[in-house]
Length: 196
Ligand SMILES: [Zn+2]
Ligand SMILES: [Zn+2]
Image 1 (cartoon, rainbow, N blue to C red):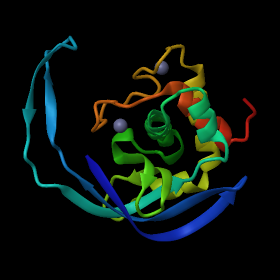
Image 2 (cartoon, helix red, strand yellow):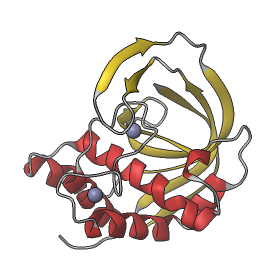
Image 3 (tube, protein in one colour):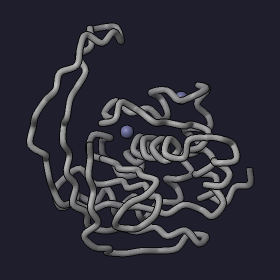
């Protein structure tokens, strides 16, 4: 479980009418449990609950709104909106290291159909180090390239519903649920103004 609060905005810009922000956020991670897995198989041996204090830190994040019409398209196609946001978040985190010279473990994310601080659907990508080491800032600067590379990763992956090479994340705090590959493509195409 990751909780993210927006403390303040540092910079913002409009890309084709979509708002992109760089700001300071307060992130708290609570590890609520984990699954024990047998080596070399996916068989789950059992789940243990951990009771750790939340890890809390203040860092930088980049976040963006969605293009008009994308949500309607997802609803019309009976796809999973939250699954689409979550898939965009995971795939963008997988791709950002190519631009920001870091490891995906240095980056965290939060995606939600409604964020209390902004009043709308949001994908946040945050720097995993207290104060930030420039990862979110880089993401803000190259956001359009990040969207395009993220779309390419998802669209060109031959899997049907998402796999570890595209939208699944090895460090998802939510067991990779929900995820919707088709909805993610609609959201990213909307951001890039690509007709579908
Ligand atoms: Zn895949
Ligand atoms: Zn996740």
